[in-house]
Length: 179
Image (cartoon, rainbow, N blue to C red; front, side, top):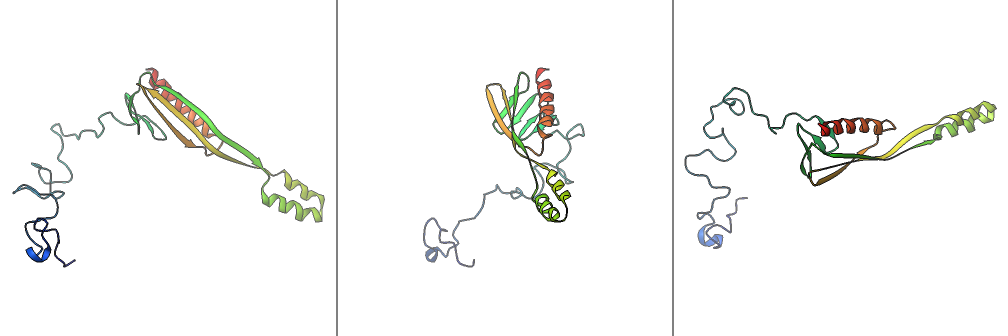
């Protein structure tokens, strides 16, 4: 790191100009200003964070209020729908959900082992074959269309109760869109 900068001096080699020249690394700042990233905003009084607004309350970050609903990467704000594809109007939005999950029921491995072990001792070991476990895999796809834009997202299915929960959230979004 002690070697001189070979690009200092307008393209001349470091040995000709000593490597120091008039080259300065980083953004240039007007004289008399605080360097970028340090200190307070211009004209601000020292204190914690930014100074408050004129009425004493800080302005909200988004300006649209708190989120009313979030489904995957779709967020419903006061009068708009915020997605990675852009902001859409909430009024008149069309919401759809597709259940692409499945629930499988199978006999667990430990139940088969116990049935074989206890079958030797008595026929009651066959009752272990009545044990079942359910496993849900897949996704629930949610689509929203409004203002000429379309966005789709998927939510992983945690269990058989995931789709009714998503439909409840979706019906709430539909009721907000109808207002």
